[in-house]
Image (cartoon, rainbow, N blue to C red; front, side):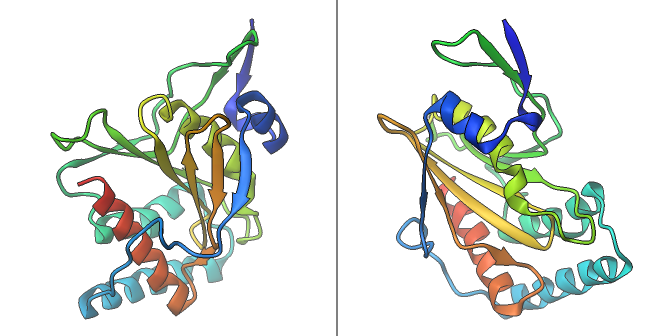
Length: 213
């Protein structure tokens, strides 16, 4: 049996192994119901931007810094630290065996948000993949193959799943759904450093949190 590391897969390999079809959406509607932000949320979002900007100015932002300076505060502000969500960090995923091929894929995700609401059967998953940013020039699409591989495993338990790949500054949301051939939709890329797009970023995270309740 061939054993592959999810981190080393190309997008073409992932599309072939899992029969993924790629599509684009130019809006988060009607997938999500976005609500206006409160003034307090806007103020906290501004503080997150200011904190992260200081590190961007200094140069390279490590994966750990991305997690603690940007992603963790955003998830907290969006509600992901509250019941019924459980945050899991840096765990190995169970082996993924590719149907009709003698291939097993191993990997490690960065952040996984699991809804444990009593009415949610089975558990609902939201995957977050972090990319270390070399002066913020790393294209966040480089994390897409890995994210799709992890999220694909979830489709055995739920009809659709949300994922996010980010380097702390740029954010690429992906919506994946079951079908005869699974489809993943790329949503508009958002930027924490731009006021309007960062507001939309927080609105999207809050809306995904609401789906899990």
